[in-house]
Length: 232
Image 1 (cartoon, rainbow, N blue to C red):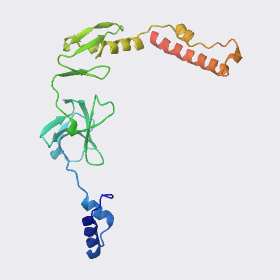
Image 2: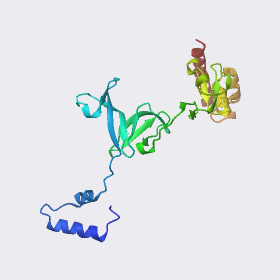
Image 3: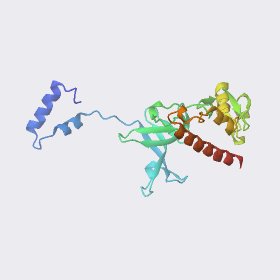
Image 4: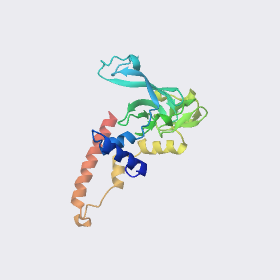
């Protein structure tokens, strides 16, 4: 309210300061005029520490070293939300209370972002999230890549969803092809370095020739070690 003082505010503060025996401070007066935002949530259940033990929030005895919020009620519409629920923002993975006493929600689809509970909507028919971070709903098509880095079809529904086999799933053919290109072993070490080669036969051909040569040897040895690990 620093920049929004009205004549009424000024007069009210002056009167309180003049006649108050405790000489009310400006900061206390400001806080008394702040509009406090009512919280739109009620904590329902808590998980104790790293266990699977869930207790009602109003029955927790406060002796546990650490509680984690498991479920809450959104007071604006009395809807309930719990860890594992599927929403328009992804599957809920965590609830936290920030410094402003607001509830923030993390999901498996948030990529580091957090949401207020007002942003959440219940989602039906949400099947899974693809490798390129797209939510697949009932009826949506997706593209599969098998563990040999080959396209294995365009499908919908969970009948063709078998991540335990090492298959990867993508929302578009282009995304699946990009994954294959970036991950399928295609080139030998010699082929890689032949395309990254600098002509070192003439030391003066490059002002950093000596340093680059050392770097090339180092990187080549590192890649050789990585390749050896892959061959085991």
